[in-house]
Amino acid sequence: MKLVETDLVFYFEYENKKSKDFGYVFNVGLPKGESEYFLATEEIIKNKPDYLKHLKNVKWAIYDKNFERKTDYHCWIHTAGLIKGQSIYYKVEENGKEALFTLNGQKTEFFEKIRDRGALTGESNYFWGKKNGKFAIYDVNTGEKLTEDFKSSVLAGVILGKGTFFVGSYGEEIFYIFDLKTGERLTKAFDEHKLIEILKHGDLERAVDEIGR
Image (cartoon, rainbow, N blue to C red):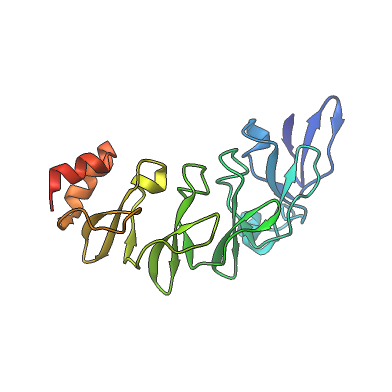
């Protein structure tokens, strides 16, 4: 399977055959052998001046190895997740809001932002979602909000499929480690410098022992 780009369109060559033409195809997923899916638009844009600026003005969909469209058209679809072969989920962006979908349809509500690691990348069943300017951890299967609101989100611990601990912050670059299972706060406050040190080794249980209550 070879992705071919011409002056006007993109298409795939396979078994001495040619797929239908696409207006633009990202070189992720099927073209790289990462999955059976790829992200494309059928709208021709390469005939426009500075055509890359028009990528945000067309509708996108996910297609399979048979070049059949598998999703609705959306303003934008992120390539993390399904397209890269990481999980069954893909992230859709519509009108500045983000939601997780599967090929069966919408899986979560729309958020102001969904962080890329966690459920989307197949590392856990959890994700950080932002609503009303605040982040919380949600369960992708139930949609349940599992934590209180935090000022920022940290990609570590349970989000990445490691244990049940996570890092939360109420603001002012002050952080704590919590247990998602119990909701208990496990440490005293620590600063951004300590957070960077923790993220380098990625072991929140070790960090709890180091920081103390």
